[in-house]
Image 1: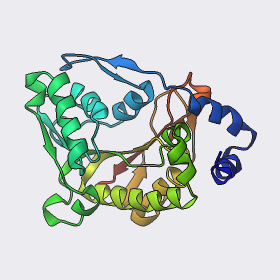
Image 2: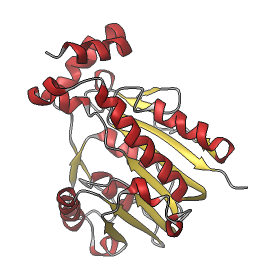
Image 3: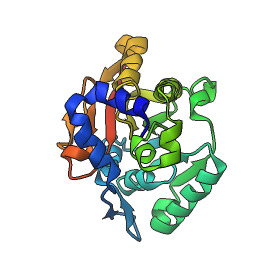
Length: 257
């Protein structure tokens, strides 16, 4: 047991932590995702499906999936993509990008696959490039995060955990989210999602976006019924969702002036 880990999350969740901890140690549920343009089912946590479905899709233009691997959420977006719209599934890691390509090739119909491109950019830097400013008609950011469910189930990862981990990841998440907002067209939808359970990586990052861009950014609260309300989004936690999650979702709209 890593006492620092225990103390950190107990300070957040109080007496609930023992129940949440137990749920995190169990295997998350996995169900086959099917739908339009899906030629073979892809097994994933229902909370992940809810997160991807939260993005409001424009009738045309290009959707940007900023950190797309392993590809399940890209499939969910592609399954609902209007026929005149396109998806750019982006993944910085070459190894993870290979997995992303395999998932897209294996599960999407040829018609849908033709409207999905795969890129390998660092999404945190794209917003600073003139060619990418206000380029996308929707952005989905499933940001790299603490993934406490993985940590608590992996003895080596748990032994190495320190409170610096969520703090460091929150900095990376903020760089990604700010860049994604700059790439978003006015009037378009941006979803920020993580599988973290710390407010530092969830509401803390969402709050920074609203504080920096002020009247340019507006909350557009996700409307799925599962989970519970947080300050700026919704979070599905496994102790109260039949094992599904964790999954945090905040949704924004870039205001038009």
